[in-house]
Length: 74
Image (cartoon, rainbow, N blue to C red):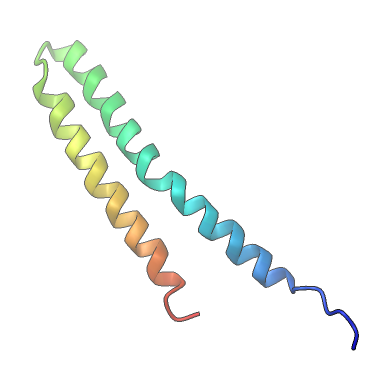
């Protein structure tokens, strides 16, 4: 019996799935950064920081679930 190496598509799927772990924290970090900068600009501490942190979290979960749904059927 000969060894058959995995196809490139398997490596591509593994790479895409491993990148999903960075989606949620990076979305939250971007929301926090924008909120912090806008709070400094407008002097509205901590309201814009909280709003953008929530928007970043919601965006991160949305992107995470959308990315996971791509692999649900495969």
